Amino acid sequence: DAGVIQSPRHEVTEMGQEVTLRCKPISGHDYLFWYRQTMMRGLELLIYFNNNVPIDDSGMPEDRFSAKMPNASFSTLKIQPSEPRDSAVYFCASSLAGTDTQYFGPGTRLTVL
Amino acid sequence: TQLLEQSPQFLSIQEGENLTVYCNSSSVFSSLQWYRQEPGEGPVLLVTVVTGGEVKKLKRLTFQFGDARKDSSLHITAAQTGDTGLYLCAGEESGYSTLTFGKGTMLLVSP
Image (cartoon, rainbow over all chains, first blue to last red; front, side):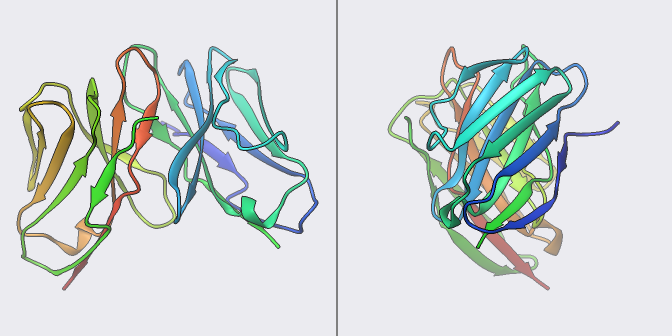
């Protein structure tokens, strides 16, 4: 079975550019989570969706960050404009309602120069 | 936001040694999970503990949830090089669908 799929795996961009990260959750999962991981702050929840609806975006650091889930099999996290401090590994995870197991994708390593 | 403190932050040992890592909070969690993350990969769930005082074993790994459900420990017996990775604990608050993660313990097991 395919797990959570994220693309790209690596992204290098210049400050001010728009960055779009993509995620395909496990088929049938109701919840989708976006996390950011850095050495300083660890793994932080940015936003999560239930049945494609954003439930809590209080972890989104600034208005430069936005996330969408147009259907059950696809979500995007967009940063516009990007800044060097956005450099981190971004993870997408999905889970099934009624369970407490989150399945993580391999992550996107973002470097903003 | 409930905080989870993990200790030690980094641990380097030889193969065959035993070790214990800790996860502590001042708050109560309805459940606590342990994940292992290998370089270049996402975290993978190892175990979930839900009852105060609960002990779960996964081969050479022993997980314990504190009686008050505020802390947890992970003990590894006879560590192997394949145990190398970042060990993360994550707590779930009652009624929420989200997890709060600690910063992790980076374990390096050398041959």
